[in-house]
Image (tube, rainbow, N blue to C red; front, top):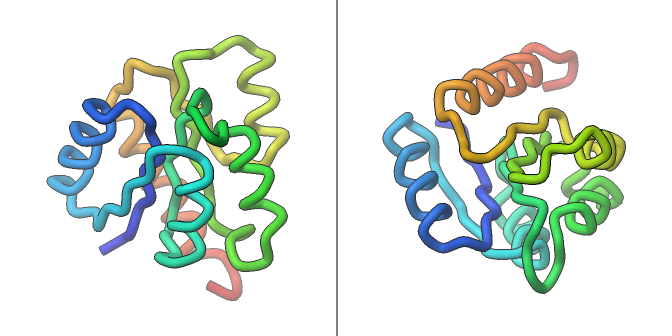
Length: 128
């Protein structure tokens, strides 16, 4: 069972997506902002992080950079979820180190496909 860290400040969205991903067989860890995400990633070592960008306390861009610069978390793949989907938003997220960018509202089937692609690729990579 793969462990996912879901980072979303909206409680309703966080709970709904967490339940849906749990039903798909994932072990879930949740965080409400970027600062919590960094702590949770260090503590729980998820297989993948699903992160919103627009959050209080610490936004997703800052959290992604911090995770990518931490020797304990830099290998964890990150999928960004955001309602902001301009080419600049996508470019910034990918440049910061995320693997995929999914727009809100979330299409669960597409998100699950991205997660499977990333986890499958990581599982077959040398050294994993």
